[in-house]
Length: 471
Image (tube, rainbow, N blue to C red):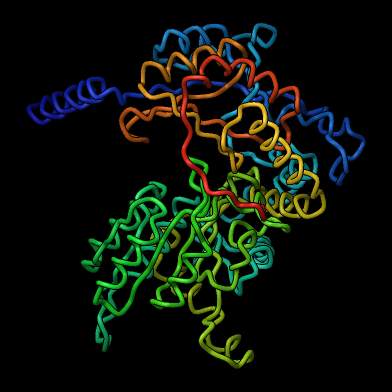
């Protein structure tokens, strides 16, 4: 009984602390726009097209009940119990998701998922190392490796798990290893939480030395690299940063890689299928694909699905092509799948998701206009706002939490789903509206959002972004 009271007291204190720190968050229940019949309305079900399909609005439309909407406006918790009647639902145009190419609702993707579910169910339920690895998983891995121009690929349950697997695997202790087991990890201060947590685990695992460098500050990074005495070094960074929408200077990073001989790991979650002529990602856009040692990515953004992946390159030190293939092409993957704990101890992706992701990759390759449409929306919004926008992620920094909440409510009332991003996700006094653009948005959608945001844009500021003309 005393233990129950102790836990109850602790839980009450924890919630009170979250409230006092203004970090208690509520879940907002939404409904995805229904349209089972509209999947074929373009007359091209399961195939490809050169034009925007009639089903496309579903990819950027959400619906909320009047009760949930009012609780949202009043900043009150939503229980999710009241979903509302369909005819009473309030529609919102979503400008906060990561479905950059609008593939989550594509007929070919939906058809692939449903066909796989009917034929195979969810597939083998177990770790990939036990019974959860099928020819469909392997086919998707091969397709992603081809996209990233790498030798190998390993599917993971999420992008978060992929980053964790990489960091735990490369920092493992090897008994009797003749050189130092300890490694030095250099991480950008604005890296995603999954990288940060992975680095923390690596630090605990073998007492690794961790160096955090100022955001995209190559001079500081080089200073830290040059003063580090450890032989094995790893630099890990996002390629396209999820909150600020700016890019890591990969051209400068690969120059440092050549000079200091470190392993370069990039999280290309927001760049894959979005950047580069073929959708290979930010490294393709920079023309440095062959200099990236390990890619981490996700299937939950531009793929419009769910899951993560690790794509690994061969050891470029070996000069003989046949030796590269025979000796080194699978070593990184073997390491990750054997010692990446978040991979080893997770159930593999379901077959419908794997089939849908493969279909999304094919669609992205065939319907290149989607990537072009996405970047057209980026250019349109930059022109309308006058802001230095360089990616589909637009960070409109408002300042205080209070003002960011007010701005979000104004946008919400106007029919747009744009959420405020507040501390501790971002630093104090940098609360912002995080806007994401996608190929399924129309010019009219973007124009209307701009008109709604105009009063707030006049008092906002944006992060200084580095142009990337090759995107």
